[in-house]
Length: 103
Image 1 (cartoon, rainbow, N blue to C red):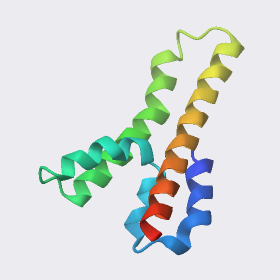
Image 2: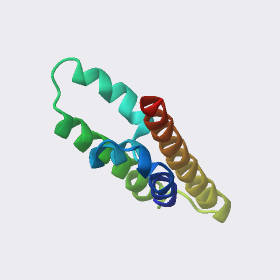
Image 3: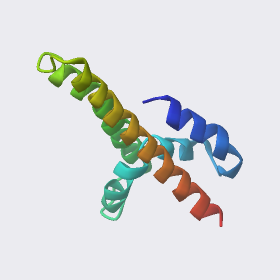
């Protein structure tokens, strides 16, 4: 799950106003509902922490939860594919947010 956000950081780093924007590339999709929480007073640090927590949960929890239940190689590769697609979607949404902010 890590290569997509890292590639997005390399592609968009010139558009960053500050370093904290890089976290959007790890949590673009989950950042949208969490942004609503900023309207009720959630601090930027708390929002960034929640984005990181959601990304780590998406990376680790399915592996731990489904590790014993998945018996076939195909099922394991499907799980890894879904996680990679989720990571790509997160990075793409974060990059779009950064590009939209810069426009």
